[in-house]
Image (cartoon, rainbow, N blue to C red; front, side, top):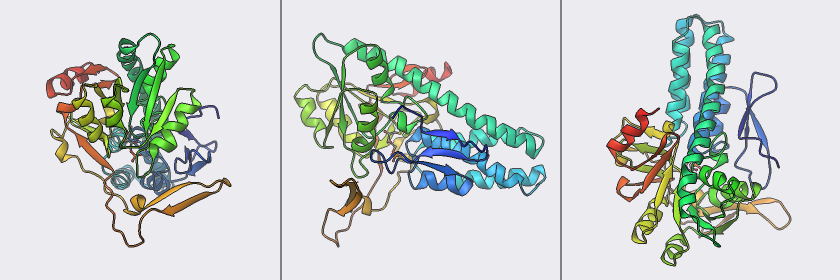
Length: 364
Ligand code: MRU
């Protein structure tokens, strides 16, 4: 299919549509969000996932909440009080991605600055659209900056081999992505690139989503098991690791999909540069240390079971372990700043430390 984005306003002007990522790569289905509860459920159930997209869906969720509230003809005080409740409801959908609270708070601030429910609703509408536009642009610029790193690694005759974990591509944002934006930029610039795609158990965002979107864009890639990266790095088959981020602290500790930390350790042991790419909205400057980032723990059934397509094209879920086996399922881990070669954001590339991050963000 031609790329149509991950989120779009509904034709009726009172809904928002999101691409249902739970069904990719097997089915391309859009679901309609018609109110606060739908927006929260899309985030919590991971129809819409990836830090950037979560922030954007939540922003639209604020507008949808505003639409619901205004139908009761409230005064401004009541409108804002109910909107604040909606904000808390959205923020509680998933705990780790910093963009969620960022998007919600940004929209709430726009409404608070208004004098009537009608103007507040208009501000929420415009604010959600603007946030989607500006986040897509931020990702495009991440691509431009990251392209320089890839270009510097380009060699005659062999592609630049980039390893990535999970999905921090177009699907995790409104467009472009974070970790994959430099890959798309390099591919478009005619630089030969090849991506090693970690399958990313338990939900397999690498196998299902990253492999799908790279194929859609014609970028050469190979799917590998989550445990293969260290082996490939020892053999000199990885030129750089680029991952996304769900939240990055003031000192540059990076929360990202579970397993990222192990890739960073292997990269350090093998002198492979390890980059995290993120829009400024993913920084949480209120937190200094990665240990303070809340880590989502999800249902153990995601570990015990796996979903896929059978040979006849239907979707099926199977049990991987004995019926009674217990499982724990931490969705994210934290890579300490010391293991991160650099952070690629829309304002440029910096080292992962407090002073360099502050200097880079001042350019905003
Ligand atoms: O649980 P998910 O799929 O919402 O996880 C988010 C991710 O895809 C990754 O951790 C990603 O690398 C960062 S999000 C841009």
